[in-house]
Length: 71
Image (cartoon, rainbow, N blue to C red; front, side, top):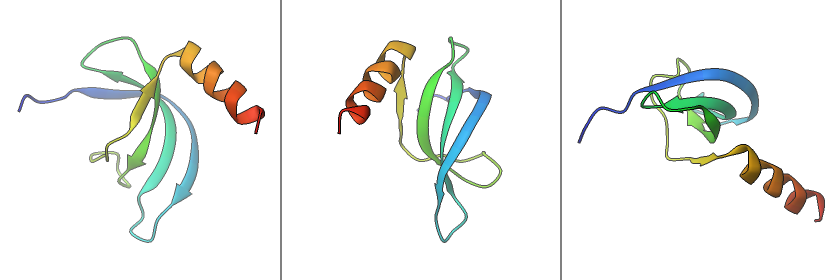
């Protein structure tokens, strides 16, 4: 499997922290030198390891916000 390059370009916030110290975060992340996208996933304390997560464009994030506001 090829190495995946990533850069957290903007830390937006932490949603939670588990007992092992990993945090669920919303960040702007550039994957493989592409334009940054909104990214939601768990990160280790030093951000060297991450879980599976989801990435969203600005439009997708706006739509998610609309859906959550309608609950």
